[in-house]
Each structure stands twice: as structure tokens, then as C-alpha cells.
Image (cartoon, rainbow over all chains, first blue to last red; front, side, top):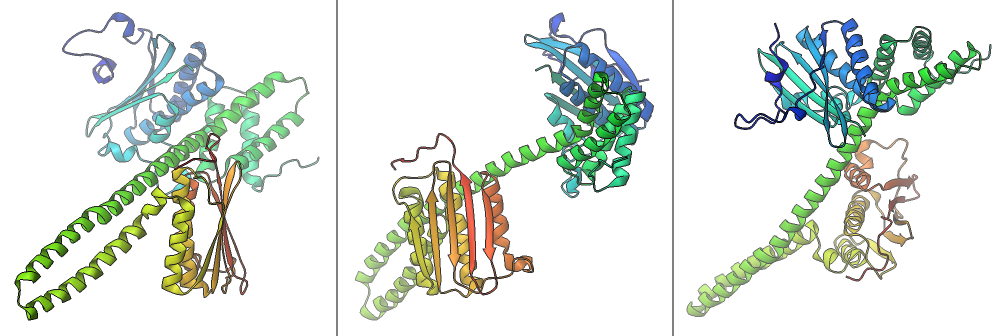
Amino acid sequence: MLPSAIKYEPYMPLVNGFLPPITSLPAIDEIRVPVESDTDIVAARQKGRALAVRLGFSSGEATMVATAISELARNIVLYAKRGEMIFGRESNGDGPILVITARDEGEGIADVRQAMQDGYSTAGRLGVGLPGVKRLMDEFEISSTVGQGTVVVVKKWKE
Amino acid sequence: MERVTSSSNPALQKQFAMALEAHLTQGGEAALLEAYELGRTVLNERLGVLDVATLLQGALVAACQRRPPESVRTVQAAGSFVLECLSSFEMAHRAVREANTALRGLNQFLEDQTRRISHELHDEAGQLLATVYLALDDIARDLPAPAAARLQSVKTLLDRIEEELRRLSHDLRPTVLDDLGLMAALDVLAEGVSGRTGLWVKVEGQREGRLPPAIETVLYRIVQEALNNVSKHAHASAVTIVIRREARRVWCSVRDDGVGFDPGTARPAVKGIGLIGIRERLASIGGALSIDAAPGRGTELRVAIPLPNDSPRELRS
């Protein structure tokens, strides 16, 4: 059983036990999609894209969201075998923010810094993978523990 | 039926057409994922944005030929297919933009460090040496003549050290470039190369006004590298350096009357490892370089650098 999503979210503004006002919490209506096959990747993209469209994102922005989901889900299927993706929304004063969380309980990443570097050795792969996701999104956070798993939280603001 | 595809890869073209057709007839996220994966695959195979656009155009034309012209929905759906195929190129494009910014910062950092070291060599080390001279003179006064003569040979060595320091500092970053600008610095550079190699070096160009410091630095480094190459490889007797300023760009040409080379067959070593550095410096400020050479007819290196729009054309130093 996967532990609760909240436990992993490092961006939560929890300081000295002070609970943030309820408005800045992620919305309750989170959408969860288990990920362990290519079919699940399609389902995750479909759910994420639908949410992006519902929040008023342009088709270009929705494509970036789908791409981020593809890359994160692909990593789960390839390296952790299974995990889940959670889609939710936040809002700041300017507009809605789409939040994507990808979690798995796989082997974890030993060297996160290295994983975040572009593959210089193979010029063709320039920019895809995790570094690519980071560039497409407005916020990116990753935490990984060897033997326990990986959590990636990315956010896309509506322009 | 007329073949409309201009793609050089029929197998890929067929794959694109089939995937798009599947998307247009069945639709859904699975077909869009297929589009994204196709884009990712061809990016990995090092295709360019225009190659992908060509493949997409071929697929779109094939799809339209199977449909009545009413199909707004078809075109819209095809549009999302196009977006998916290009999405990985968007990631790559952002990576390149980021790398370019980093390169620009790195160049600036190197230049700043070089300037600092050069000035420290010139000022600090120069000061210390002057103090040593004074101390030696002081000691010499108290010594009997034969010992004082031996001190004189130490001073001769110090003279050589001082000269070497001055040369090092100047090669790193000539203070004249900061103080008097590119043309004055090129004059000094030309004089130095002439003196060392016997080459006849001429510098032509408008002498009034300054260029933005980053551009002056790059041009100075390029001419420095070019003269280096000429004196090493060209067997030339004369070199002409021309700097020409226009409203929107600045041109630089370094032409020699040496043996030239065949750009088609020249080995990378002959083309010069230094050229790589030049190209990187240029790329970071949007400039371009071309080399015109033929066996027996000398070599000309030409550089064009766009000037920032707000660049003052007559800036007093």
C-alpha cells in the first residue's frame, strides 16, 4: 500500500507545525491513476489533459502537460515497475495551477543530480526525460530515497 | 495517384501517415501518445524540426486526400497530432536555449577572470618587482664592488621577469582594450605580431567610437586567434585586418596572402582547434563566421556580429 500523498509533498508550507490556511491546500478532488503499463500511461495522459482543458489551458499548454505525464509515467514503468500519478489543482491570485505528482516505491535514484542532467553523450536525446519535464513546467520538485522510491511533483501555471 | 511526400524516409513517412490516420479515425489519448512517441523517436534519431514538419505535412496531405474538404474537425484533430509530435522538440529547444545562456555566462566569467588575473599580474606583481629593485639598490650601496657586480646580474634576470610578466599580462587581456578600445588594441596586437614574426600586418577601420565591450572582446580574441593561425600555418608575408561598422552589425575580415588550403579536404587539425573556441564565442552573441580559402590563393576569415538595437554608435570612452 502506498503511503498518503501529503506525507511526500515537500512544497507544503508547513513551518513549525503551523497549518496553512485551507485555501492553499491542494483541492480535495484529486484524481489518482495507478501506473504500471503503457495502457496506464494513456489513461494518465487522458486524465491530466482533461483536467488541463477544464482549467482553461491552451492546447499547447495541455500538450506540455501530457508530455510531462508521459515522461514521468514512462520512468515509473521503466524503472519502478509500478506507481501512481495524482492530478490536482491549486490556485494563486493569478489563476489555476495544475499539480502533477508521480510516486513510486521502486529502487529510487542514487544520484538525483545526475538524473537531472541532459545526456551529453548522446546528442540526439538532448533535453528529453526529467530535465525536459522541468523545462516544460513552471515548478519541479523531486525527492528520492534509495530502496524506498521516488516522488516528483510538478506544477503548470495557466498563462 | 501523385506522390506528395517529399520526405527522404519512406518508412518513417508511412509510420506517420498511419499513426495520424489512426488518430483521425479512432481518436483518443492512445493515438496522441503514439504521436508523442513518434516525435520522441525522430528527435532521438537526430531529425530536425523541419524534417518532422515535412513528415507531418506528408501525413496531413495523405489524410486529407481520403476526406471531403468539409472536415474542420479533422484539421483540428490533426493539429493536436502535430503538437504532440513536436513536443519533444520543444523540450530540446528549451535545453539549447538554456545551454546558450549558460555558455554566454561562462564566457563572461572567463573573460572577467582573465581580466582580473591580467591586471593583478600587471599591477600587483609589477609593484612588488619595483620594491625588489629598490631593495637591491639599497644592498648594492653597502657591498664591495665585486659583490655589487654579482647583484647586477640578478637585476638583469629581474628585467627579464618583468618583461615576461608584462607580456603575459598583455596576452591575457591587454589593458589598452579596456582603456582605448578595439582599434587601438588591434594596432598594438599587430605591432607585436609584426615584431615577433616579420609578418606585415595592416589594420583598417573607423577609429572613432566604441563597440559594446562584449563585442570588442570577441573581435579582439578572433583576430588574435586568426593571426596566430596565419603565423603558424599560412606561410604568408602580409595580413590585412578590416573592421567595418554598419548600423545593425559589425564586420571583421582577416585576409592573408599565404598558401591557403582546400576547405573540402583540410583535416580538422589544419582547420585549427582554435576555430572551435571562436565559433563558441561567436555563437554566444549571435555572430557568424565564414572562411574563404583555396590552395595558393591565401585565406580570408570573415565574421559578422549583430549589434544590439540600442547600441550607441558613438560612445565616448
